[in-house]
Image (cartoon, rainbow, N blue to C red; front, side, top):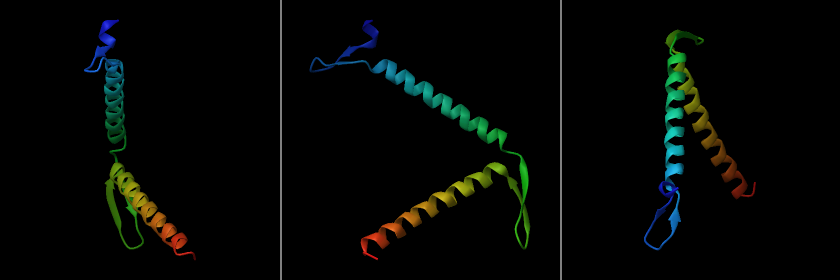
Length: 88
């Protein structure tokens, strides 16, 4: 199976093609999943706040909550690290 291995400068053998195809197939599958996820969650919903209501796509609400959770996690980890560094 000569196509699986290629010789490089120092005589090292590397089987890069199967790994390359595995990565490409994985990326295509992830992209297909993301597209299907967006299409499936594109219906409009009503969000009821205390003083007003708004209409938006479900996917935008999910992305907003993901960003808020990510930023909250970063802030909490910084507070935790600062508290333990100061010895409190």
